[in-house]
Image 1 (cartoon, rainbow, N blue to C red):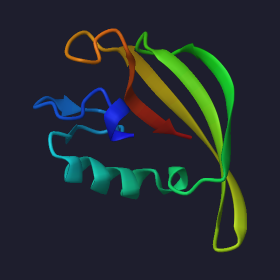
Image 2 (tube, rainbow, N blue to C red; image 1 turned 90 degrees about the vertical axis):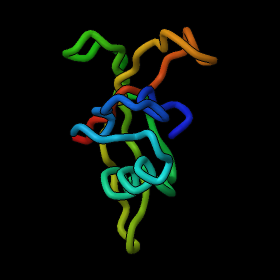
Image 3 (cartoon, one colour; image 1 turned 180 degrees about the vertical axis):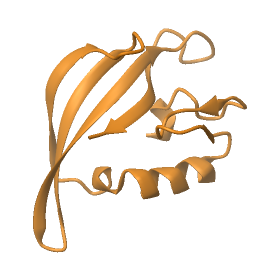
Image 4 (cartoon, one colour; image 1 turned 180 degrees about the horizontal axis):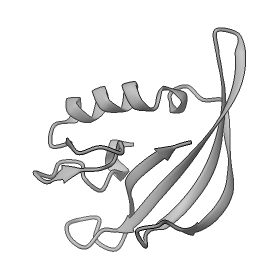
Length: 102
């Protein structure tokens, strides 16, 4: 997920987790990801349910993630907001600017 994060490795603050956070160091990202999106770790499957545009003009992909925790099955909806990278080795690639958990 770090490799596809628009704010990864940047000195700018990122809204990837929904709040402003420094993602310059990998461990900052890793700690935030484990705390904010535990359902994405070890999930058992997913389904893309919609494609569209976010309220900020980015591409938006709605996803339902399936998994199990403590022998209980769950489904959780997320929206991945994507933006096109404007510079660097990934210029022109869609990168995740933020993830919204519903």
